[in-house]
Image 1 (tube, helix red, strand yellow):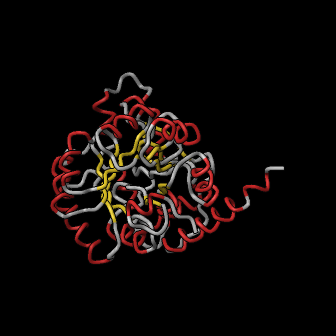
Image 2 (image 1 turned 45 degrees about the vertical axis):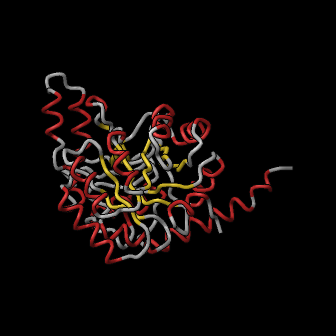
Length: 315
């Protein structure tokens, strides 16, 4: 069985973190992943402190295993939810879309393991300096907010410049991706898109169906003009947003307001016309709905077989 330092640090069986997908990653999915031996995450997204507190307490009632909270630092409620994770004694916090330095002292004082998502070596080094437990090096193949570097290029470069554990993310959906991540120097992986079709994931069925039907070229990146690129499935909404980005008659404020509520409409209503269906490039590799526990066991069994037979390529 694959066991890495990440397992010891987080108290988990498998070195896998479930992605903190806004509007998607709730107590149901997080507790299922944690019960299966990984680290489940509740995504704070743009939710307020009361919602997050309720989900944390719900997850505590559904699992006795470690779980965490993902905090999107662009959220208008970031300060509030940063306090909630301390008050509720959350064991792990991952962060995205920003720099968590202002919260680090409070989180460290509460013995919270802080694992920021980083898109570059510079951010990885900064996070190590301010006391991060580990970093998640996420390539642009992932769904949601993305950077420019690919996972294949980013992960080994981050591993070269920090001494803390590195978790690979972006474009990982099976044992091949996990094995590749370890070969690049990572000690764990974060997986998002595949968990969208977990039985315990509470998104609209139409969202799940779109993931299962996706082809390899069915994602698009929008939002570069606003400085916050996002990868999602190609839909009427994402195509319209992409076109508006290159229309000089539309202001940034108008463009930003066009996207308000789009993710919620996809997750909760399955709205194909107005919804933003976040997805990584590996959607076409996701073949079926199944329990989160089965997904994790399958991925790591495949990874073990690959890593165990790696020497066959050396003559």
